[in-house]
Amino acid sequence: MQIAIDGPAGSGKTSVARALAKRFGCLLVNTGAMYRAVALGLFQGLNFSEISIEVRPDERILLNGQDVTEQLYTPQMDELASQVAARPEVREFLIAQQRALARDRDVVMEGRDIGSVVLPNADVKLYLDASVEERARRRCRERPHQPYADVLAQMRARDARDGVGFGRLQITPETIVIRTEGRTLEDVIAEAVRAVESALQKRGASGKLSE
Image (cartoon, rainbow, N blue to C red; front, top):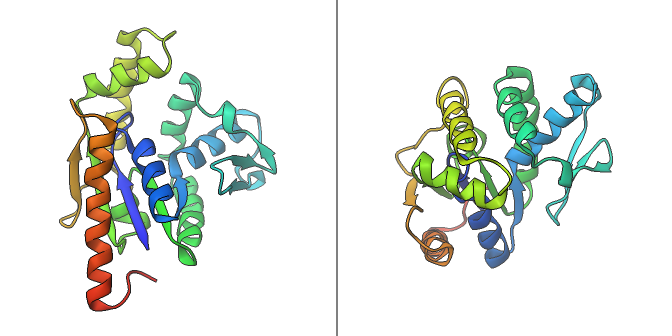
């Protein structure tokens, strides 16, 4: 089974993806963390050809065999990862890895273009969304040392980059849109679970889901 979750930064994708992966016994693939790891490698002075990324079942991210998970979530990596994701060679490299991860196991994969580009035949496609102001407030709660005005400006700039070109944020016709603003995480997760359970019921009626 393939569950694709897309949406802008701060929309709640990772929290929902983690809950779904646990509920349905899937591997969680945070594609944003993979882009962050590439950005970190380039920042450290590695050539792109020298970079190897591994996604562990416990959500840890390895860069050339070293666990770098704790280094990936900083304001600097927020910005660098968004810039790196616009590079065609990086996208090609990571999309191939992401598809390979989903080939032989059940996955919940979250990112920007999972349902439209990476896993276009995913069994369930979710798109989580909230206003940029709400998403900036959430990011500030995670990182209280950052001024709200700075986070909001960064979010708006990132949204502008993520909304154009190959791999841009898109809502496909079969995607289920879930608004997360003004709702509890539990409520959003419950709606996402219902969407997946509906897909499982269809599998029971018509055979099996995506290979």
